[in-house]
Image 1 (cartoon, rainbow, N blue to C red):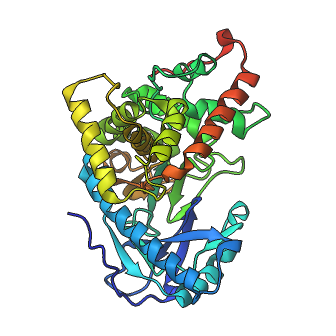
Image 2 (cartoon, helix red, strand yellow):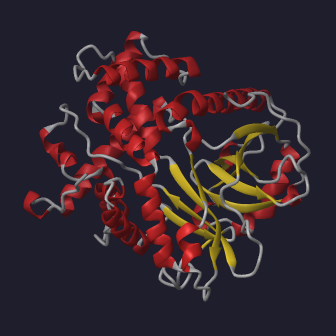
Image 3 (cartoon, helix red, strand yellow):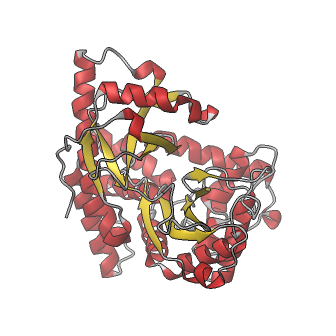
Length: 417
């Protein structure tokens, strides 16, 4: 059942919250106060550009507040009624809305400013939001077993790509997409010196434990923001910016434990299957379909409401369950929405939380092998359909940059599923 869409009126004190992490759109803070209703939850606070914030009592701010609340209410329902059926309800973390005042948001902003990464400071917490999403905590500062010799450890994976596209509608110059996945191609845009990661997310979704463990080791050598290990609530890396025994207790055992979880949990195979099938057209053919749908009025200029997403997913599911590969009857609007669902799934983060993990120096082999864990996904709000032209430009730039560095197909490193 979807969580209540009405924001709860819970007392919030800015001093009871600690900075955990942030992405492009949200800052995550965790609760350490004494209010039972908030213990074990984190708050996701929407960010905005510094130039976006205006008079908090202006007509424009009030309109924004109402629109933003509706977006978050839709996101709750989207998680329960679209994402849940796709990945399995058990993997969607509990969420609810809580009222947040401008005073609380401004004070939290000031409290955490010194803890935020420098490259994130161009945005800050948006004080116009009247409500924010509470999500079940998966990054804890204390282990379930509070005795000495244990840590709270959480692994965050953001693989970004789960399958090679199988679209028949790619331009000849884009055929590299059939051989090299989005993540591996994108490395050359991010690292123009050619010093790219050896990690390939398709190895993570291979279903083979040895390949998964090797992929995680490659990932650990250049984790960036896509692979994060939290020890007692803080992200850690060694002096070289890598994940190793220097910063993670029993790193090799943790890597192998995560590999076993990735192989075992149905979440990963379901993500791969659905993302592959949803991306039947690819952004190259969807852009003109998007433009045509706007021109004919088949697609509204406003972002889709929940009923539109539900209808699109139902139509996709019927086609998938029937085993039909005929895409000729798929409307422009349907193709656009399926691509955006695929894009949303590609951007989710998987969190694996170990109830307790032995400290460095503790042998505890049995504990290492049998440590209880919980798993769930976050960052699954629907992507904006209006971003399709931006996604197309990024896609073309990624292909062009990759081919500049790897013009000869014979020397391109193919990805394998």
